[in-house]
Image (cartoon, rainbow, N blue to C red; front, side, top):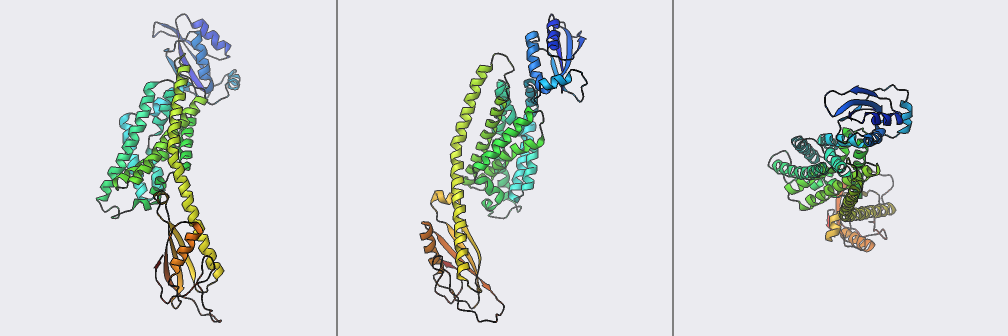
Amino acid sequence: MRLVQVLIPEGTRESVLSTLDEQGIDYAVFEEVGRGDFEAMVQFPVPPSGVETVMDELTEAGIREDTYTIVLPTETVVSQRLSALVERFPGLRISREELYARAQDLAPANSTFFAFLILSTIIATTGLLLDSAATIIGAMVVAPLMGPAISASVGTILNDQQMTRRGVMLQVTGLLAAIATGAVMGFLLQQTILIPPQLDITSIPQVAERTSPNFLSLFLALGSGLAGSISIIRGSGSTLVGVAIAVALVPPAATSGLGIAFGLPGVAIAAAVLVLVNLLAINLSALILLYLSGFKPLEAGKYEGVKSSLFSRIAVIAVGIAVLSLVLGAVTFTTFQTQSFERQVQNEFQAGFEEADLPGVELVSVSVTYEPVDILLGNEPQVNVLIAVPRDQEIPPDLAQRWDDQLTAEFDRDVYVRVGFVEAQLSEREEPTPPLGWPSLTDRSGSHLRYPGTIRG
């Protein structure tokens, strides 16, 4: 429930009070002695979703747009006509005046914004290097990115160009500052003993997650933008909602900075693309939801102009997302190909060993080194096979090459097969062990070799 206080201009008292009576609203009137051009102040309770409608009616009754107005949240209101008002205004949406005030509060002062953002990036960069999801999430609580993202969209909907420009400026400069902070921190850490020399950051799962963006990342950004918009529309803003928006932006920005610091342009570009896609998606979802919620400009008569401008901005953002989604689509498709290839190779080897039934010989592991970038660059996949073999067991001399040829024929692509052996010991058996035959991926047969080792095909 909201308590609205409005000053009544001279000569409009009767029409204003008549309008409130027609709306079935209980009110209290106080004489105004502070300003000469107002004759009274009226205050009345109304549900949050009814504030905008009632204020529009009062504007037609003579309340000027620049009139002194206060909208306060209330704990309890006792009124005989309150239940009828609640039934008349059942929604949970706040008024555009309250939306405007909340959006202004969400965007902090520049110094506060950049201080919290830089600190958040430092914590997030540490979490990336430590491969600590908990640390990264903790950093997101500090990140103040929800305010600019929401205020930019609110400014667009309510036709406040200054709010829109400031929201966009804080988002762009803030994320550039985050990338720069990650780069500086990465460079400084390389000069210390805090990280191992020649650290390969692409081997860190939390970093690798931000360097292979796919369409699921887009859903995260869209959901974050919708959550932020709903929280402010319903007047239930929460720090946890801001965390969702920050997760989509700060960690990939820090990853891009680390890519710059470690001299890995591929990492820097991939993470920067993810940042840009997420930024556009958050703003797009917020704009669409605010428009569908029915908010109109603060100044009457500008709705059509704002509507045209809004559609233009939505179209531009959507085109930008579509273009960048080509990158996401390529990564998604190539990731699916590499994972499918690895799964098929593992199944082939597992089936071959199970059908061969080789006592004492065990397939320890099969892994495939094959990344999406390898598909784009035309690099061949590397299949790494590790086998446990008894000490006196003979091993075919051309085992790796035979598997290489069979995989090449099976998948119609060149592969590189690397076979490693570890010594295995078995307990004695009552029955003599039959001679071992080495499995083929096709006919499950093979020759023998007298020495173990690693064979390259």
